[in-house]
Image (tube, rainbow, N blue to C red):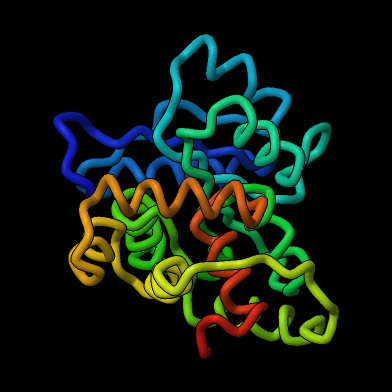
Length: 219
């Protein structure tokens, strides 16, 4: 779990009231976590953030009425980029997973996951800015491989940028990547921001997807 002087605040957004309440009760038992508030969809979430405060994490479903998970994640990434979105859904097709991650989600979890995996996912996106289970990673690779023959515009990357992208696809936190590359944390932050702009992506997962699709890393 990330080391903060306060509890990590989580918002649960799901249109199923019983599930939403059960998830909230469960998260409140995780050491270092507390549920700030609940919402039934993205439209309801928006004013509650202004009223009750900005959470660290939003745990949300995709299939919600009025404003679904795709729209909500896109809105959160635009207006509150500091909020980390963790998807919790029954949907497991590669198109949906990749679309949510490209919208800015930090992780993707299926609703058949056990409580320990949920806790692990929350810890991972706080500490490493990403969470993907082996199953979800396999789905992403399968989906990207299906479209691997599509030509991408040529983008020049330096050797150091390629090395950085390879480490991004690992389980290491950014500070550990800095140690592996013998660089300062500030330099690693610069690499990340430069690649965000160069590759037109918005998250670590976006960088990993680019690296996999363009065979910069072997999976």
